Amino acid sequence: MKRYLLFLLALAALPVFAAEKPAGTSFAIDAAFPGGNILVTKIEGDTVQLAPDNRDSKLPWFYWYFRVTGAGGRKLTFLFIKNNVGVRGPGVSVDGGKSWNWLGAASVVDGTFSFTFPAGADDVRFSMGMPYLRADLDRCLAKHKDNPFLQIDTLTKSRKGRDVPMLRIGDKQKKARYVIAITCRHHCCEMMASYVVEGLIEGALADDAAGRWLRENVECFFFPFMDTDGVEDGDQGKNRAPHDHNRDYATEPLYPEVAALKERLPALSKGRPLVFLDMHDPALRTDIHETLHFLEPEERDQAARMDKLCSYLERDQQGPIIYRKANNLRFGSGYNTHVERPSPLSAGWARSLPNTVLGCTIETAYANAGGCEVNTHSARELGRDLAVALKHFLQDKPETITAK
Amino acid sequence: MRLPSLFILTTAHAFVFSSARADYVADFTLPPKVEERSIIGTDGWDYRLPTQKGDPDTARVVSVRWNGYKPALMLKGANLKCAVPPTTGSKVIITFDLAVTIRDSGNGRPFRIGFGGAPCGELFIDMTADGGLGCQADGSGRGGEIVLKRSEVKNNSFYHCSVTIDYAKQAYAISITGRRKDDSAFQFTTDARPFESKSKAVSTIYIISANSMTAYLDSVAIKSE
Image 1 (cartoon, rainbow over the protein chains, first blue to last red):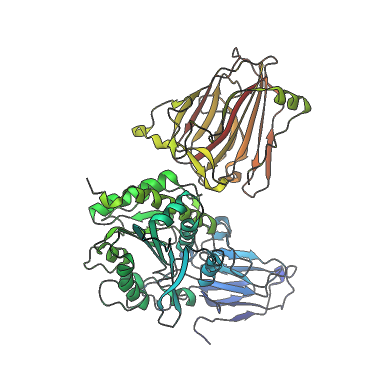
Image 2 (image 1 turned 30 degrees about the vertical axis):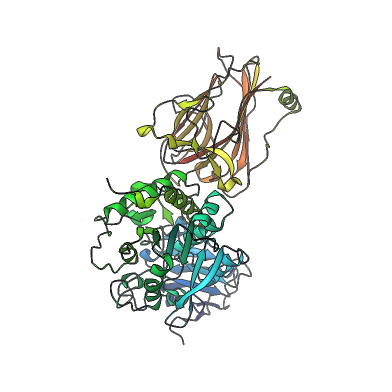
């Protein structure tokens, strides 16, 4: 049995649920699909005790994603520890992972939630988030397959031989003045950031003022899956041993995605002013982890530029996630304290390139951003807002902005 | 999707509407209003109270992405007034479209809009636990009636608001239509409600908006018979 495949059958249904599904009918829980991750530790009747499969992560982490089949018409109760379920409950998909909704905060008590499966529902997915995989990116890109401004390329091959996608958006006939590089999933579990990236892609391709300006003036590179194997295999990725993908930049990289980015991005940017944004999700709950925030760079000029970008985002945002600059994490506070040189972090490495005008990390909360629901729609809209803010930011010639 | 003007019009109302004349119209698509620019200093709009640091970006005309890029006035922390030509008819119809982006929770009334000389009270967003979209508040930021609970307000979706004031009969009626969060249709209408006021004309628009939410205003019209 593959290590990510845990397939258990529950044969006995409690009499109290007999009206919903005849006792003795089986259901199955598994994670044998892209992104799947679950450990089923116990099944008693219609109550299932579960936990994330931590795999090679050095610290306990909270990513899980499982499928229930054969439970149509039945009510099941799932038990996790509290810290493994987010503040709006689990993500639920009744169409095989194509669309997602939060079950709702009221549905969860101390990590326990119940779900009544619609009659005939034969593939219901549950996750701590709203999983985003290569197939989701492909669905997005399929809408633009004839767009002459989009070029789908391969950055490299992953350790397991998968193609690592790289997208290029811009007018191939022109040499753009600026370069934007967007990376995501250095921590493969942080899937909500992928919807933001998808919104950025849509924004760069949009037939609106921001999209047209970006295509005219910027060459955009997207590296959506910096831990491609981890995304598809359903790993935690965060704190992976011996170090994770976003701690792989200081010396000779362990991971082919990082090695390829370090080699290719300087060549792709050709000395043009570069904006580098590394997209993440923070922890699952509490405090700053329930906000949208940028991590301020240590370098004062870059911090001033980030502040400018954030001012535009705050002013121009039209999506459902209300962003406030005040939520940004200043350098030296909270967990934004990395001072190692050379930096092991992607954004820190990017800032060390001579042509980088801004390199920073953006953290999008998994489910709750300051009282605004983060979901597939609102996260994509945040990406659209970021595209607009980037346009205004670059129109300001950020290379001329210095700290006062 | 933005609803067409669904507010209920009786046959008599329809007749009145068709014979009404526009005293003030602002759809934010026409000059002198310019996209990506502040509304301050344009077409009678000015600060009611200076905003923090005098930020002109708190009231801007923008293309609204979620509304087919149609321009609207975006408000974030603006305290505005707009002097309009005083209405001259005995019956006045005020219409406008309002959309908001709000959080799950909050406090106070981060958005209020009122019309000087219109004795119908303010329309507002109340973010307290029992709050929501309301109307008929007095000018102090209190009172009024919640017509759509906060949890049912649909973000980024225009609510069409209409107030008909009959100064001769000293009565007004309010209609608000739009969508609930679950996308079902929402409609609120009042019967004619009496008022006592010496006012005979609408002469100003005022808006108080906090920066804890975003509001969009479109298609403001004040017409009189």
